[in-house]
Image (tube, rainbow, N blue to C red; front, side, top):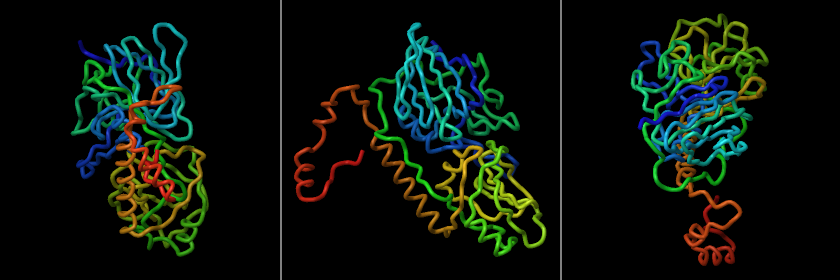
Length: 352
């Protein structure tokens, strides 16, 4: 039997995304991929997939999906409401940040994303879709990727790589991932010399707001204008995700995953890779500020972030029984040494 997820209702903007389409920017092809790669990686870990497996990126309001398979296992990561409809019974809420095993005929409704621009849904085994240029990322502006490079539409049938959910219990993250707070960290340049000293000081001290023109290509920011030394225009050169261009009106543009690969506005700074997931989660109306760091600091921050993500994945555990004690997990803890250590004034108990 071929297994599918059938789109009953498409939602506002749901696309298939993996971690990106690399190696083609010299041909004018953006990397695309998940705006929140941390959420995608964790959702995949919850269903037993490799971290780069393609899932669904849900923006604003999610789709309704019917299970046309004996069973499937799914996990959603991000601030999104989920409900399950089964056998005509009243809808039941499902928790994000854990896996759920669904049965044939179940309808999964993914509601509003609240508190971020996107959330991610992974399915055990992933989707049995043909990659385009080595990736299942969807680049809507050019119609490239699975489903003809477009968002989900009513009636779409997403083929699944597994005919049924894998064996084993459902699992959960002990707590939602912590993305950190504070200013977005940036490395100045590559054209910071095209801006006045006052502009650089303003950029690193002012608060900006995400304007209404915000999508997967980039975010137009609103705030104090940044003054150029001469013209804002430069000979077109390469762009990367996180580049912050400043056109002639002095209002910064923070480029995201679907950005053009070259541009002719001076770039005042680039968001460090460890903060790109935070940038990708920003919504119109959100406030943000910037903090400059050195390249070597940015590299160290990214290494610490990868260690944190690995720790979150190691902490994934079987879902604890509702209203009861998970005796198997309890017996698995070294309670005596932990108690002795607390008495001695410290603790080696795992942080959950």
